[in-house]
Amino acid sequence: MKKKNFGLFLALALTGTVQAESVFVTLEKDNALAVVDPITGTLIKTVPIGQRPRGITISPDNKFLYIATSDDNTIKIIDAETLKEVGQLPSGDDPETFALNPAGDKIYVSNEDDSLVTVIDIASKKAVKQIKVGVEPEGITVSPDNKWLISASETTNMVHWIDTKTNTIVENTLVDPRPRAVGFTADSQQLWVTSEMAGTLMILDTKTKQIIKTIKFEVAGVTADKIQPVGVIIDKDSNRGYVALGPANRVAVVNAKTFAVEKTLLVGQRVWNLAFSPDQKRLYTTNGTSNDISIIDLDSQTVTKSIGVGNYPWGVAVKP
Image 1 (cartoon, one colour):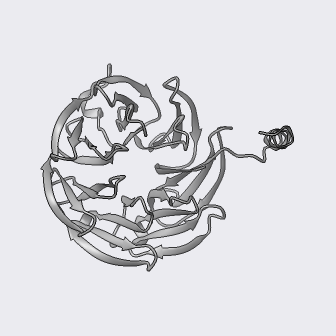
Image 2 (spheres, one colour):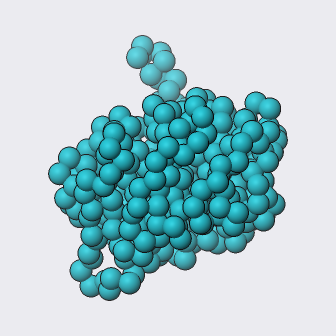
């Protein structure tokens, strides 16, 4: 960086004009969206967003937030700069979780009450397909190579492998009871699935569609009934995965090479969902019943901050 530009950058940083990133958190019971500056550890603002907001993601170009407002039966499109609503998508009844494909042109929504996945074309703002899946679908994700859409059915205890070209199920895999969240490794070769009732994480091989490893979580001083794995996320280099353990108030750190549980990190109460910072130096967690988010420094593997955000934080997304 040239001296002149560096001086300008430094001056802006000292005056607070430069902002590294924004963390967006849906507040299920406040019907609102919280905006957090994770560097200063402050809640910047809270804005009304719709009835019972839960699932949230950001477009690949970081221009738009997509937020499932469950009691409005829609997914709202929000300008990520102004936080103004610019459109809605027909999600079907009671949307909670959804997945955006890598190209950013399709959204797949879990319709839990109807045992369906709704496929939405973003450009036309139309539902183009409904796929019949198992009972109570919730966890949903698209592989980074865009070949597979995964829907996890909580009551059927199954993950469905859906071909994204045909929008049809080509295989089903039985998993431990009440699968809650699903996530692929960056190379699309593994699918990680959490089981809330069994207290486990299952690693599936994408080629065979079979489980290659099951990890049973244990936390010293915490009874097994409190260990309820939900959100899961794996870093881009597939070195570590992180699993939210719900009422155990911990995030489990899993070695993605050996599948050993390296440690558990104490965060807020009823930790639910997770998101990386853009540089993957930090991990953000939503803690539903302590009404805060935790910030984990991933170099030191320590929890560095807790920030109050509002009532019942659920989903989290990050804008550079």
